[in-house]
Length: 219
Image 1 (cartoon, rainbow, N blue to C red):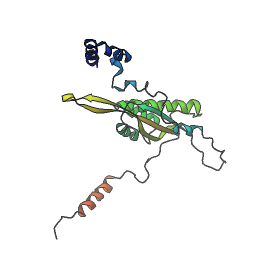
Image 2: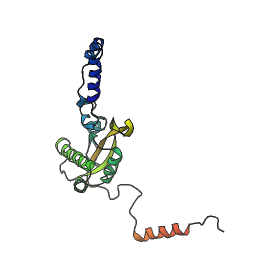
Image 3: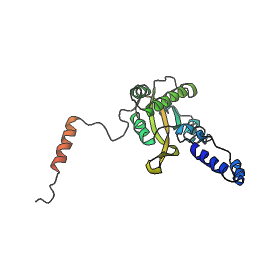
Image 4: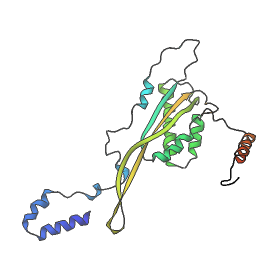
């Protein structure tokens, strides 16, 4: 960018004075403003703080329950928006902690050497603090991850220089992370209908699949 401005100024000075007003009409722009990294994500569109409807679940007021009803467990919803991490990569981490207790989830995330794991761990710890201080949860360890998913955030487009004067487009992707903690103990099987199978059951399924094989173009 600097060499273009320098060549343009030389052209204007070497030519007639008629080009001088045109040069002064467009002031020089600092080259550091033309930068394609995603560090300016907070500066650009700072009014967009991400989705807000997920946090509205914390404002729901339920009717009082009768003594014969099953006690409704307390829950808290929390989100972390515009994380500089791809949603496709964040999905694996968000799915990993589903159905875990908060202590187990924090312990497992501490050993995952990924950038998204640190953001998910921070979001879970923030949700635990909200549950204790704002939602009257008595024991901070008596919580489990009932919902954990991510969504697509901001996408900033930049360019990368290629050979022969060509450019390629680069996308700097961000993601939103959503979590809901529920009071109580986690269920034995988070996904219904997918109970763990014993070794004998898996062996019988494998044998059955082998017997159903068919050789194409045979009798």
